[in-house]
Image 1 (cartoon, one colour):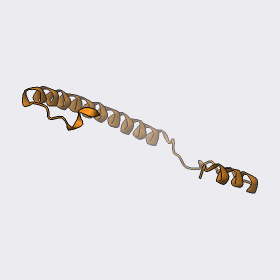
Image 2 (cartoon, one colour):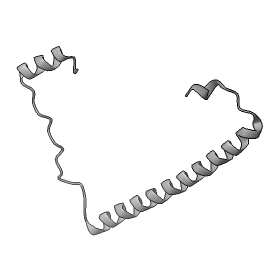
Image 3 (cartoon, helix red, strand yellow):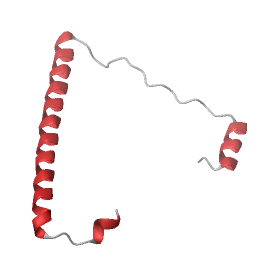
Image 4 (tube, one colour):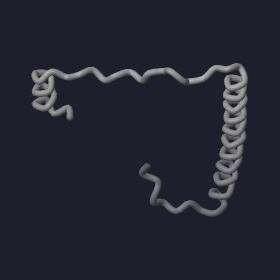
Amino acid sequence: MENENKEIPKEEAVPKLTDLVVRLEKANSEAKEIIARQQEIAALNLIGGKTDAGLQPEKPKEETPQEYVKRVLSGKM
């Protein structure tokens, strides 16, 4: 992080930028593949009748007054 303020000569910057562009394009193509797989899985679940209906989220544990005081005094708010 110390080199952030250093100016890089153009001869060195262009290959680095080209490498960064290649890496970004590769990451984008991988992300597109992952999204396509997720969409396919969601479609298969929908066709197969698998839904999230009826699922109850976990209820948070209720805190006793003593636990609350301990948490407040310890600074974990």
